[in-house]
Image (spheres, rainbow, N blue to C red):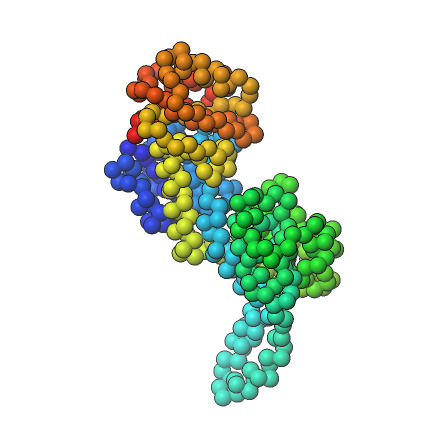
Length: 391
């Protein structure tokens, strides 16, 4: 019986994918095998020695102590793409909000309360103050062509926009999904100088902090619109404020309000609604649960942020899972130890990611001896071993 602890409210539609004859699920559990979390901060939590996996029902993992988890052999998952369509729809709404003064006109209309029969005439007289532009025929620059960036680019192209994409690290998987009508920009300066709208869909890390800075803002067209539905820290707020005041940036639409941003003019700050749909929360929960199940039951890793992707079909027999430092001669030491125990390897997969190597080993015959785990852990560099029973 596996124990699953939930932090925050996790959608029941996802949790029902845990079969009740194999899993115990509760918000308060001693010695859990896995944790499913949304936004609760875990940096100060004591991580039980029984903990094997943490799944974030969402993309960002800033609330999880990744380094500490890695040291303890805990695999951390996220759910990239599960909320992609929710974010895409909000980005499309932001394109319209940035082009037509919809938000301002709605607030103005509220000031007409109490005017009675004069309202229709006042509306006709006042609407001229809220003119805007159509997005059809305009150029949109999409920076970052991952799960969200690709479908934003495709949707904008379908609405009649000219779309330029920029992502030096685009995966083959995402490239296949990109409309052939989306053009690839040769470089960031060419991209920004040709764009009427710029939307950010890139991860936040040390290298991308303040990605949109004074230099890149100078490359942009005068009167361009900037959309940020990835992370607030991707934009240098001081440089942004100056660009807005000079008219270089006509509108900034962001899903990440701060005191500083809220005080700027020509900003529409949305209170982090990107993934706030029922469908998105269900999709994230389902994906998180399925990934945890696949790891606990089969040792397979998909969408981990700290371990390599590793998947191998079960052969029906026992399976050994080993994580070790990514140094030479580890595979030979593991193989030699198993041979010395009289264990025949039926199939083996070895994957690495930076300093970590992960091994999935299917073996022939009966369950291995109870002390095999300790023997494998005695190999210098091995820091996690799991032995899964035959199916």
